[in-house]
Image 1 (cartoon, rainbow, N blue to C red):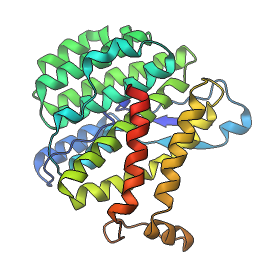
Image 2 (image 1 turned 45 degrees about the vertical axis):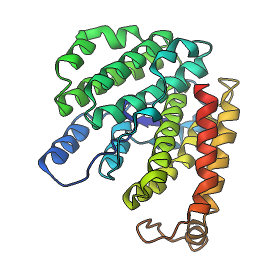
Image 3 (image 1 turned 30 degrees about the horizontal axis):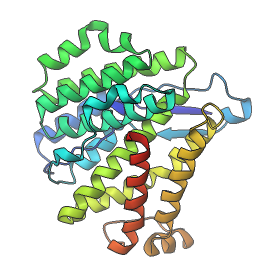
Image 4 (image 1 turned 30 degrees about the vertical axis):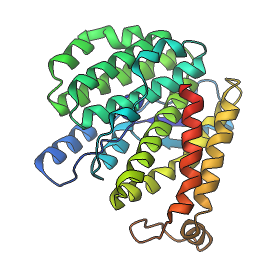
Length: 294
């Protein structure tokens, strides 16, 4: 079993909910995403049968870029309290999941051009990383100083944060902690879904809803990824159960259920979804997020 972690991290899993458009900046960002694409496989402690299956988790930045083009308001009070980082220094599960949470918040700020907030959430990520033994990844090559210097250059910052994540992935692999990036990805995905649902509830932006539905499909892959490491941490089974509930609620949406039964491709730009169908998913996401950040 191998997992492909495309270069840009849990550190940018979140989406940038800013104005969409096919301008030069969008093209430049897309080129930056593609230019740092890489992979890290995590199969050192799995059986030969497991290695025959591959679950691919997308680049965190790729997800962020999808939401960037959706368009929505920036709501700062949705972010997790950056001062709570030390509160999560209780277990590798808590450290990893909240590393993902803060990574999502960092990307939300970054792509919305909230530069001071971005610096503050990079520090929160660095603090969480230090609890996971990742000081070297953040301190090597003056990466954090370069982040400060280039904060107003989005494509430069993307590459800098990408380098940090590449180093953290390598360090996790060297330390035989391949399960932690999967936990972090689940945390970052949860935060991105939480903020997206909250944003959608306020302005009913159809493009945000379409992106939300598309990213909810990732729940299936995250479940499979977590199950590989189910025995590595006592808290992983509960996380799997929570995401399975979200996936089940997603599958119960009438248009989704119909498409699955007919084996049809899902086109959320035309598939009807009601607020009553979204409500249980939003509540489950909120509950999962609360269990991680509380």
